[in-house]
Image 1: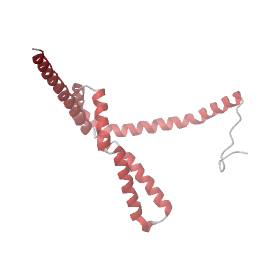
Image 2: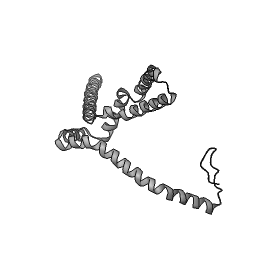
Image 3: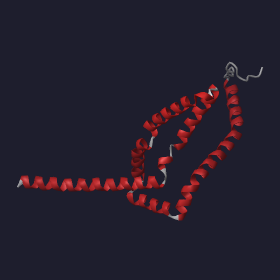
Image 4: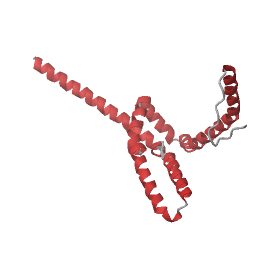
Length: 175
């Protein structure tokens, strides 16, 4: 009788764990579906572009236009290095985990439905530009405050008796 109960318990537990695994797989599938819809595989594109620009700048400084193949070789190697760290295959599992921890399967389905709607599509297309413009606006406002914050730091240093630091060699120190 004990053996029968043990077998029944094992069968029941394996059924529950199988259901939980299927549920987790379904949840992960919804997260992947949302990430695809959200073009998450393009999230790192700006990083690749910045690295390419950096290599282009160094190449231009080298003034070696007849060695374009060298530039292309190094850019390809940089892409391989980036792929190993931030390529979609490297990032996707972590993003799926992040989204499954942050949203229930039902919420992911709601997000998918929203982003498939006309307003959701507009949001998806408009959000990158709005985010960039928001960052630019914030940066411009911050630049206005920098001189005032620097003055406050200087005033505090004076009040605390901190001597001003000498400008580094080649700096723009006023004498």
